[in-house]
Length: 82
Image (cartoon, rainbow, N blue to C red; front, side, top):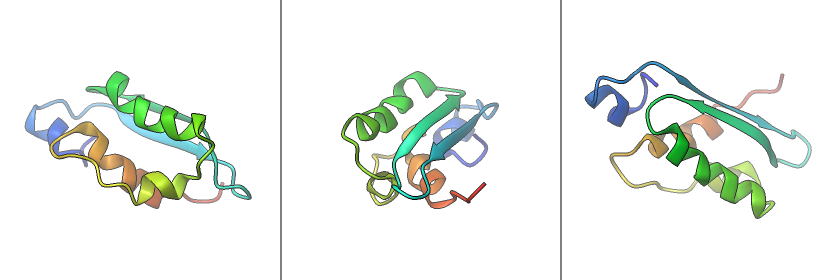
């Protein structure tokens, strides 16, 4: 959460975001957001999962500023094969 401007500005930088994506299909299998406004932010990911869209949909979506959601495109861009 130290990379989230909204969290830094509010002094709430403890926490993390993590996502698991099917490498072959590009679909999000699950995600965890622990930290400030994680309960609201996770809905962006849930909507993409429900729509069966691939993770790039979130990677290139432009969230409003300032929100915790603005780190989601970075999270999707930072995915690595595990």
